[in-house]
Image (tube, rainbow, N blue to C red; front, side):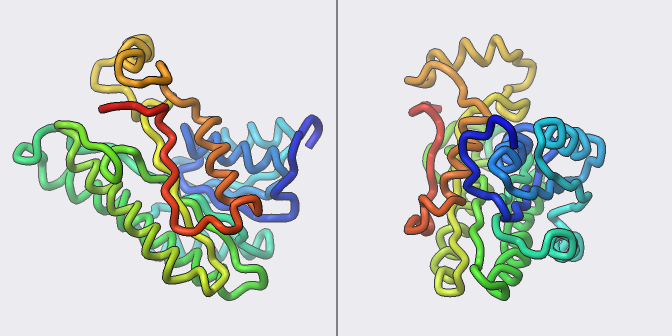
Length: 258
């Protein structure tokens, strides 16, 4: 691509779940900018097509595939279609996730709890399983980056226990799967963003300006992380520069206290 400083992923195929917005979109565009053929997946066709258009406008190559990560059949088909189109699956970023269940544990609706587990935990498990099966069967293996959170695995906040528990499970899945499959040539890590410039990091009724003021108090950095900053951390973990990094969970939160 014209103007690209690095091209670490030229000739490689990267799959990004939850690629229609926020961190997922930033990750997809960053991979495309460095030469990867990118597949973005999610439940909303319109948002995915917007990501593809942005990649194309910058000279990258991307494909949108609609899939629900809570359905094993969808996830397996997603991997198959990626390989059928581009010949391999070299990098996967399991970013799809939701926020539900705010409030004290005793007040969290069971439906919210189950939805969190379905998307944030089972969705990552199903994606990992399908991706690993493909990567270990192909020459060169592959690398996977799961998107967890600083909340749950690393820090706690009142009223956010359910969400934090789901993300703690993602970090645990990452560490265990990394040990299980490094001998198969599949290298697995995670990033754990704190508040970032996405709608998910806004509290109910909060504006971006309100959030900025809050982060001046909570974060030594004094601001939220940009989605591009998170994306660059993902690209590092997926790159050859991180060849000896296995099972790590990289926190990107500006030192935020919750």
